[in-house]
Length: 178
Image 1 (cartoon, rainbow, N blue to C red):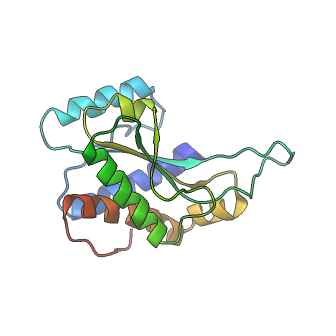
Image 2: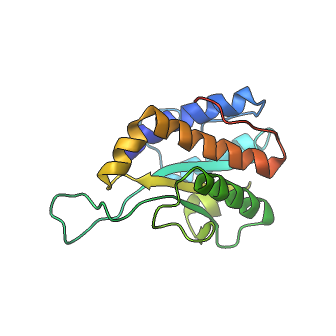
């Protein structure tokens, strides 16, 4: 689920960012997944030409409920946004604005804290540009899966990412249909 969904969202994000004049490089354009090291290498190689200034890693979250045998965990919900433990100011500002935009659009749920979180994820640690990883909702929560698959849910996910990045870079942005 996550891989297919993420590819749909990444394409919609790319279209939205291009429409605002941002240069976009999709690091994993192929359907087959690639290693985290290869993702970082591709991102860093693209950054060398000076056009790409932020790495967004788009995900859904999972929260297994060991007490439930059906595979669903409806108790976990919402958004999580991450920057690296030792992130520079740019990553922290972008993560903060993406988090704020997601919360403003109703995605706080019960897993989000008061702001973005930090982690030592490879894509945050190994990319040579500001990097943010988002977990937009839980693919182990039936209600959130329905929302993630809906056009409205996908538009919201695109809009909170774009709104946060635009605010971080001082680019005017109005919510648009994805």
